[in-house]
Image: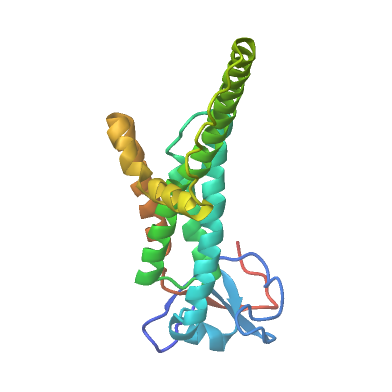
Length: 248
């Protein structure tokens, strides 16, 4: 009980769906559905939207790309937090998190674009996945740097106390210690960001075997994000009678 429109572009077919649609409105144009309905990539649609799905529903636009970027950036930040938090808490670096980050970025971008994909979506997904994984090194560095700084300050305080005690016993005073010039916060963050972006390749220099494995897994995660954001043609099934339960 399948029907195809005259246009050869839509991929119409037959599929079994149990029962009538969950609601009586098209999920694309939001208009009430009277009589027969269709399913486009699983979404309930009216006949007009099903017919125009290959050209209208999956049409790329600036708004769709912007939403995809926003969703992708959010997923990349979440992936970076996930990656760095796991390493800080456990002290273990697991490169397989890169695969999860790629999946998160790809799925989020497709959700933001309402299923629109293409070359520029793939490029953005690849860059966001790489940035999320590589920049996860920055929070880790800051965490360990703070711990080292507290330890250094404690040791320096002990040395200062001993020096003051010696000066008090000898009656001599020491010359004031020159303070090293401090780097601005912006410059420090910029250096950390550059180091983070290069960290997957720097890891190879410190640990060739583990670093190469990490790079391979990272590129697998990027490939997953690129594959997801390639988009897919609209698959149209129907028509179905909204008043009759589909056979199982």
